[in-house]
Amino acid sequence: MKNLKSTTDNIKEMLNSLNMKYSAEYVDELLEISINESLSYENLLEKLLKWEIDARERKRIENRLKLAEFPEYKTLDEFNIQEQQSLSQKQLNQLKELTWIEQGYNLVLLGPSGVGKTHIGVGLGIQAITKGYKAMFVQMDELMHMLKTQEILRASRARLKRIVDSDLLIIDDLMFMAMEKHEANLFFQLINKLYGQTSLIITSNKGPEDWGELLGDPAITIAILDRIVHKCEIINLDGDSYRMRHRKTIFRKS
Image 1 (tube, rainbow, N blue to C red):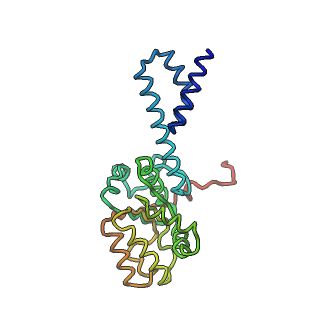
Image 2 (cartoon, rainbow, N blue to C red):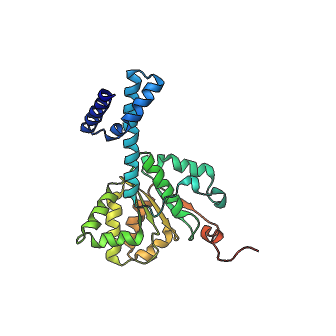
Image 3 (cartoon, rainbow, N blue to C red):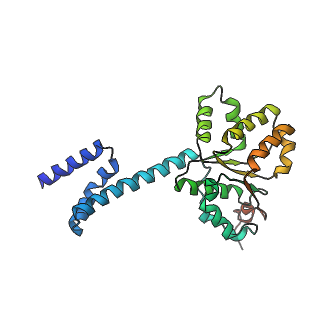
């Protein structure tokens, strides 16, 4: 038993030296399984390597979910498609396949507050990360703050770099307020940088035909729209607010 323990400790040390820390944590359990199931050396090694690969993948997804800065963890499986008549289950399943990211398409989700725009955006972002993509979520007001402070704040530069390096960027509440000309120009510069390399999901309660009023400058408006809607699917979501329908109350039902 002493020799076995010593051998096990040596195996753990060697695995750690090879940066296989997840396998090192699994050794004791795996050796017990190998004895109970009479595993061959090949099967034992296969299980060990598979454990390491799977554990690294779980950690990678965990890290990317953290860096994505989603406001909450909501998957598409939690989205009640029955309450959204303007989007079919078939269409939602097509979106979940994420082929549109590979094809360089953008999505614009339009509709009033509470119809599920942000939920769909976050759900697609989570789906993208689990499939190996890098995704980022940002509120429009936060994005404008980053753009205006990137020259003076390291944190803003770091977040913008993650945005530029992403495969998918979700911008929530686009055009909820008017922009000044220099703000619109900063936004255009970012969209231009992302064009052709990063897919966008944009949520808004105003359609592209109304964005010009908020962007102010007609030339910048045309340039931004040209890059966003060139390859784009626009989905109009309707219905009553989900939050209002399912709001909690302090009163007991009689």
